[in-house]
Amino acid sequence: MKTYIKKGAWDERVYQAINKLIETHGKDNPSYDINHKPFAVFDWDNTSIIGDLEEALLYYMITNLTFKMEVEEFYELIRKNVDTKPYGKNHANLEGNLINIDVLSADIKVAYQFIYDNYEKFKGSMSLEEVKETDYYKEFVAKMFYRYKVSSYADDAVDPYCWMSYLLKNYTKDQVMELGARAYKIMKKEPIRVETFTSPTIESKSGRIEIEYFVGIRELEEMANLYKALEENGIDVYIVSASFIDIVRTFATSEDNSYKMDEKKVLGLRLKRLGDGRILPAIDKSYPISIREGKVATIDKLIKNANNYGPVMVGGDSDGDFAMLTTYPDTEVALLVHRENDGKITSLRNQAWQDSPRYFSQGRNLLQGKFVNSNKSVGYNE
Image 1: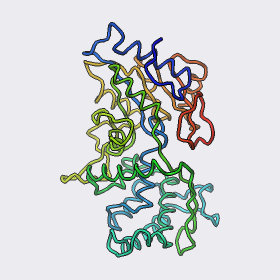
Image 2 (image 1 turned 30 degrees about the vertical axis):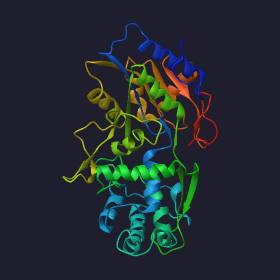
Image 3 (image 1 turned 135 degrees about the vertical axis):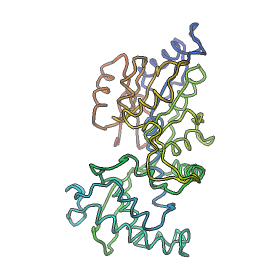
Image 4 (image 1 turned 180 degrees about the horizontal axis):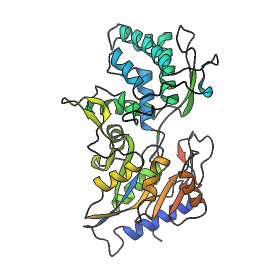
């Protein structure tokens, strides 16, 4: 059998299946029809790369204070769609008391008010380095990560999907692209780790809290090579992500990264904008909402047409990808990047480990930021 992709750290069964797929559907097949091309679809975060772009950008935004909101609109946004019931016992403060978004957001507001009044990028004169030395900064950072990791959506929430992306309120597309390029250049160099944030001893309503947050992103050489090989052999490659489209396109299309994808083939959630292009914290529902079953709707509406067929290959890592991994009869290779996350995806992994002809599992080492030559992941695996 001819080989089309570099072996790298692909699991052997995955490697063989991909080469067979390209041989069957690519340009080497005598029946290949350029006017009726096959296509493949992949998730982005924790599938195409190591890590999550939105979470990497959130880390950069919180620690570098890159928001474009005044205090009241920031306060309103961090409370948007959040359930007000107390967090569970596993998320009590360090004194063992239960807290909720009401007291947590009040503390974040006080801290953000200090930052807004004193940081030179807002209304003050202090440098970022000076601000970082203050307890208000440490309070803000710890409790923002806590809010992101612990809060759940209210039952009556409207658009309960992408709170992180809503923090880009008042950014334009170009500004998001510039911010993302700057952030990802730095985050790719950050040591991959699980960082612990503890709020300082400071007067507050919610008390002291502690939270862990995964830090780091890495390109996956095998996935970048796969996308290139598919395209070179006449199989169109699309990304369908549940993340904000501008964030994913910033990384996937950049000349500074290995993927260098066509912007039109990178799809994700779209947010509403003002007439001047500034982002609003609301989903643009004139497009399919590319979450769970919405990924199938995205494929059906924005990718499938009379001149193609597929997807012949689909890749994902979680329940968010379950629908697109299982829906299409044209799919010959459903690639599962192995993570220790529960849900319906578990049944597909089990099929892959039992040598299913459709489902294939690929292992990785998260803290080393790379694939491993196995159908299961090793080491820390969130």
